[in-house]
Image (cartoon, rainbow, N blue to C red; front, side, top):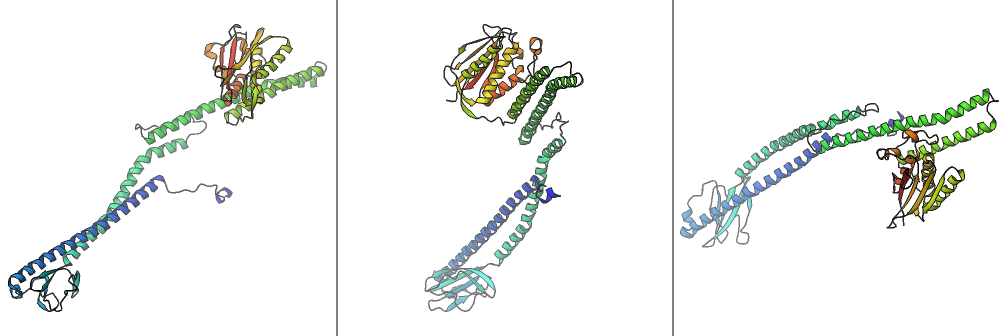
Length: 449
């Protein structure tokens, strides 16, 4: 209830079908109404112009008769036309039955236009005849008014019918066009975490809806892969965490039940070793989780990769187990995160040290163009088959044979190396270790100059 009152519930608005139908209907209605008005006005103007032309013709005919025989030649003007003849003194010398007895025009006002006589409208025209006569002729607007009224009635019926027809047609056409979208909505609504393998039915037509269905299926593919990756990651992480925890629990139980069997020093060493292993595992998982979320933020500074390698070389030499060749290390400075790059180098060196028989070798330097820096960490171990050189960068991956028997690795080291390299705009790949016979990990990073 609180969510609904606070705006948490999504307000349901008009659907796409309704909005398109309403929009199309409004546009067509406005166009039809404006078109009807313009048509009626144009028709009216045309009909009135025709009446004016007819009145001018009538006035010309009467003027010709006056010029030939004078007012006596006109005879009785008893038709339905409006005719009035005025002399130069302003007196009406001849008029039709429907014309008034008083003159409609004088010498100063010879264009009466539309006049009304006994409630009837006439469109008039004026013509000057010889002998000082003025002829005023007109045609009744009654037929024109009836025609315009008929047209207006037809338009008043036809325009609403057309609007309704457009609305119904648009509603049906849009509904048919959107029916695949509604089907996709129902299918997507039925997708859950346990049914990510289901896919939408893609229309045969390569239109917007077909491309939408194809895109949504691609999204479901990515979600399914992501879910499988997460499940595998959680399963592997649980397995990796179980080993050190089980060791700690075992030693703790023995120390509690049989204190004479385990000394405090031995128990302390186990706790430190397994605790450190847990710490490294959790730290690695946090780095990978941040990388997956795009939240691996870099605190940029100038970092000398050669110094990091030499620092690791001293640490490995101190163990006394392996020989370390640092002759290939040259100055290599990049712009990056010191803590992450130190972790990258540490993971590379630990990985090489675990798999080396007797020797490891480090190199560092800038490329020929100076735009990138490269470091390599190589060992004289059994090497990595070409087919597995990409797979070793996956999480919790250990290869068979010698590389599956190491006891110190979690299977996250090289995955972290690649994620850190990518976060810095670089890359990591596996190569043959020339001169050593084992594997060589090459990391390339932009210099950032």
